Length: 156
Image (cartoon, rainbow, N blue to C red):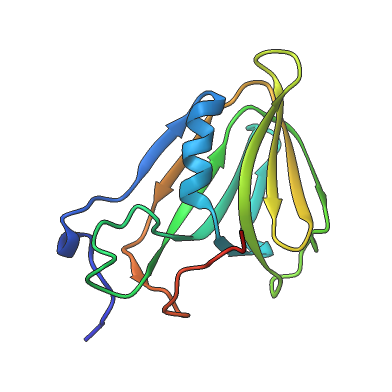
C-alpha cells in the first residue's frame, strides 16, 4: 500500500495553467520554483518550435500541507513558439545531472518576441528565444511525498 497523497484526499485538482504574458509567467514561475529534473528530461522539437521539461515540482499551492508531509508532482512545462535554445552551465546529455529550477523570467526584445530565461541553481541558465510567450504548466502524475520530506528554503 502506498503512502503517497492523492489529489482526491485534499479535494484539489491537478494544475493545468497557461501563460501568455509576463504577469502570467510570474505565476507559473512561483509554482515551478525549486522543481528538479534530470538533464535528460529536457527536449527541444526544433521543427515544431517547442521546448519541454518534465519536472518534479514542489506543490507550493498545496492547501493540505499542514496535514501531511510536503509533496511533489511530475509536471510538464511546455514552451511554444521557440526559435532557438541556448544554455550556460548545463551539462548536455548527462542523464545523471539533476537540475533545479529557481526562476522563469521574460525579457521582451521586439514585442511580442523575447527571451525566456530559466534560471537554475548553481549559476546555470537556459535561454529560449520565442516569437511570443505561450507557456503551459500541467501536472501529469499524482502527488507523492517529497523524498526529503522537507520544503526547500532559501536564505533571505
